[in-house]
Image (cartoon, rainbow, N blue to C red; front, top):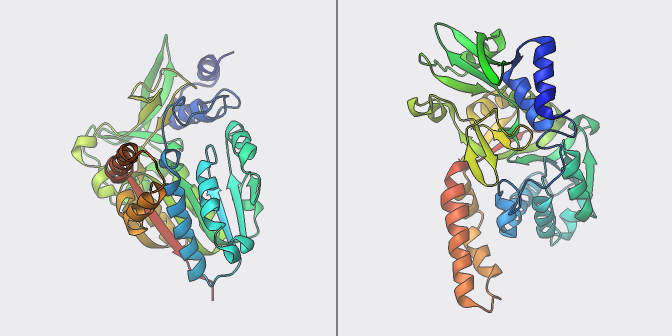
Length: 353
């Protein structure tokens, strides 16, 4: 039985399901979901690119930031926890940079928490030293270092809501095709908007990512001292709920093409939504995380020495014209295109007194 038929049968047996449950099944249903089925999703033969795929410079600059965090914490034992490492390319580039710092590398422990068994196997095939894999951060007694993610939170399953005379939640039914049904929203969804001082206009549709709230709370409780670094595309509430986003931000990626056909290509296409960084900041503060920085990928990379490092990496290129084209491409893609869409949120937890 295919995933579409499994979801149809579930609705037939149990009644309508929330959009969050539908999205969770589409992405993570065992062996049939988008991220749990065979095939590499990232790169030329996949459905999308990440910054790490385009150049090792991205990983090197993340490594440089981690090195600065290590120094701030006193140049002692340092743990890195990466959520959702994809192909492991970013981890590889980070470790390649950090290996130059012998003292830090010796004191370093690197863990990957990977939900996808397919991705985990790809990672293990080439990350041959320093890395261990976990199913949950709760397997660690405590973390002194940095917990980070790159393009993770946008793939958490979200609730969809629509403001009518009251806040309504989107549920999914099936009758010769998937259809949407509105039901009064649960209190937790109303409380989410209330806490962030968000008042949705009539007919405004949006997403609420409760999984992101639970995630930031969980990792905050596991962090003894150090940092949380979240890299993803999204906005603060002030930007996310502007009138021109009245239909929400959910989108699908299939063969490097974007569409909004959420109920097609089930298990074959990626489904994502923009991250509400205000929610992560607010929930982090409640969980003992102080926000240190919130900036664009462009500003982060430039502040870490992107321009200089790119120049260094191509000085050995024999073809000057090809090298210039490469610089132009990386500048446009990482600084202008992805550079404006992606954000860096860095939060810190102080050592308890």
